[in-house]
Every structure is written in structure tokens, then in C-alpha cells.
Length: 83
Image (cartoon, rainbow, N blue to C red; front, side):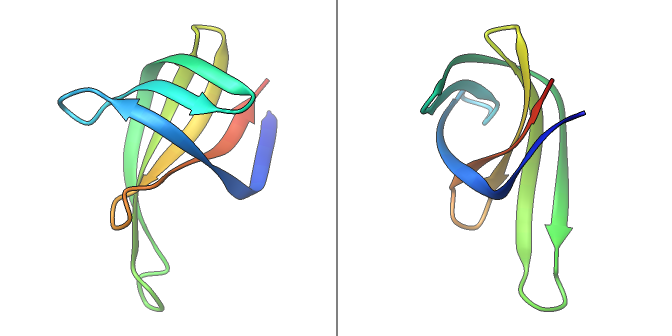
């Protein structure tokens, strides 16, 4: 299981040249990311289009996180922390 953050918390994410997240800066979570899974989702397209790219990534090779990138705004959010 894990902890779902509602609302999701905005974080700063550094990406590599291909747009893959490589580093997270979000108090208190900070460190390198190793992505393990990614997917895209369109949410509520019939009301207001939202296009997101989701990532599951290991923070410091120890803590599994789920983050997403709002492709229209460029903002990153932490949505879930797995235990």
C-alpha cells in the first residue's frame, strides 16, 4: 500500500535530455530518482483537458514514489509514497 497525497504536493524535478526525471527537490524528500515505470493519462477530458505523464520512481534507491508531470503547465507533483 502507500500514502496518497490529496491534494498532490508540488515538487521540483530535474529531468535529463529525454525528459526522464532524475532528481527530486521537495521538502522533506530530496535526492536522485531511478524511474521504474511511466505512463500517460488524459483526465476529465470532457470537462477540462488535463494531460499528465506519471512516473513511479525510486528515491535514493529506497523509497518508491509516484509523481506526475502536468504537460500543459510544466509543473511536477508528488501524488503517492509507497511503503
